[in-house]
Structure formats: C-alpha cells, structure tokens
Amino acid sequence: MEIRILGSGDAAGTPHVGCTCKNCTYAHNTGIERLRTSLLITHQDHNLIIDTTPDMRRQLLQAGSPRIDAVIWTHGHYDHFMGFGDFYRVQSIPPVYGAPEVLESCAPVFHFLIREKRPVRVYTPFFTCGLEVTLIRVEHPDTYTTGVIVTDGKTKIAYTSDTNEHIPRESLDLLRGADLLFIDGLFTQSYKKVEKHLNYEEAVILAKELMVKDFRIVHMSHIIPFDLPYQGRDGEVFRLK
Image 1: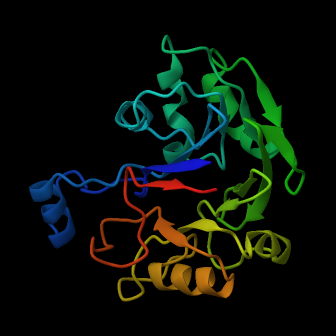
Image 2: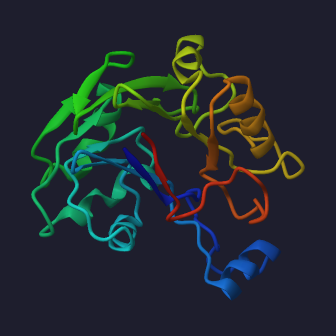
C-alpha cells in the first residue's frame, strides 16, 4: 500500500495570496507550497482519493496523473470536495463514498456529474480498491465530519480530517495503534486556540497518546513554520507493507 500526501494545507493554502509573513515569504522564495489537504492511497493497481480539493487537478498532475477508482468525502467544506469537477472530461466519474449526512451536503453541487453515490454509516466497514475502510465520527463544529480508517489487513492508516480535541471515544479506539496517522493541526499554540480544529501541539500530544507508529500533521495554515517536526509535506510518499 502506498500513500501520497497530495496536499497538507488548510482552506487558504500556503503561501496565502498577498501575504508577506515570514512563512509565506519563505514559501514564495523557495517554491514550496501547501496545497489543500488530500490523500491518495494506491493498492493493487487501484487508486483511492480522500477528499477532492480545489487543487485536485494540479495535485493529480504532480502525482503522475493516476486514474482514480473511488473517492471518499469527509465533510462539506469547499476545500474538501469542490475539486470533484476536475474529473469532467478527464476520466470516467468514480463512485463517491461518504456518510449520508456528508453526501447530502456535497452531492447536490455535482448533481450533473456524479454517477454513483455510495452512502456509508460511520463505524460500518466497507470495501473499495481492495481495502477495508471505516468512517469514524470526529468533531468539527458545526459541520458533520468524519475521519477515515483504511487497512489492507496488515497495516492501518488513519486520517482524522478536520477536528478539535473532542473526538468520540469509539473513534479514538479505532485510531489507536495505527501504523500511520494523518492528523489536523491548524495553528501553533502560541498563535491562538480555535474551536473547530486541533492546534499543532495538541495534534502531536494526541498522536503520541494514541501510540501510533508514525504520524504527520496536515491541514496546516501559513502560521506553521516549515521547520517543525512531524509535519506532512506535499508529495511525501509512504510505502507500507
């Protein structure tokens, strides 16, 4: 199983348009970016994408233009699903999985394009691309939001999506012990506390409490410096056996 970080940024991405802060200036000068957060999972010649961001066309080009066999949407914020239109006239439209509440929110936007909606209840495993997938509830006020657990029977990948620290116990139990965890960390603690997201320090603490083997912080804003440990980087690839 191969996992590629297609993007590691928040809704605005890094660098911000028009921003001259230290981190955005560094990103401009070095050509580094944080596109909106999305994951590509490849298994047995099948490709599963978690969240179709507004950067999806560019992300897939940078990943070598893989054909996508299935899509999972985690919630109805534009930075997590609005890139679905980039499938238009590019490939056959892949089926879209998501919690019923998520599909009800997102699917009407692409009523002209979606061919297969596949609603799945949280905590109910399903199979796609040769993988067992379970959607889990996380807490991202005021939007119904899920994380994702993916396993090939040998390794477990976990993704919290956008969430604050109030993750349900049942979800924490499923995240625990993952081989690789991707976890939301929007700001640094010294910048400000936000209601809807974990900050970087909270994400690191939670990942360690969950006793995962490895983890990366994603959904990072331009406030996060590029030299902090544990941060996911666009284009970073993990090959797990």
